[in-house]
Length: 84
Image (tube, rainbow, N blue to C red; front, top):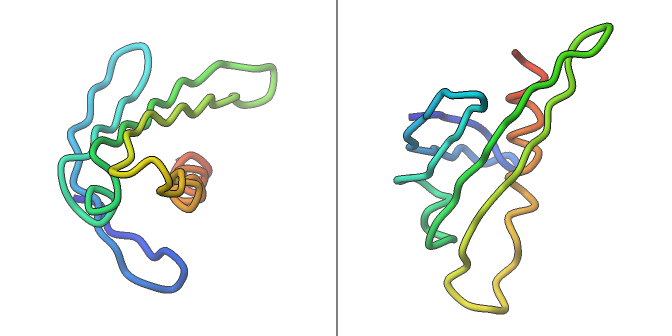
């Protein structure tokens, strides 16, 4: 279970994590799963001369077609990558 603040509010994210050539977080509970039927974040790291480049892909399914995409959760992923 991961805990974080989003827009000043505490939230939690329960996930399964798979490590292969990439890191995959699949949502199984928490606040994000109240807003989306499914949520998966895939992180791929590529070495560069100085540091690494990380590609973040988010796959999700909305409950209703007019629901917003999970843009607000991208900042959480960016901070996760920067903190590593």
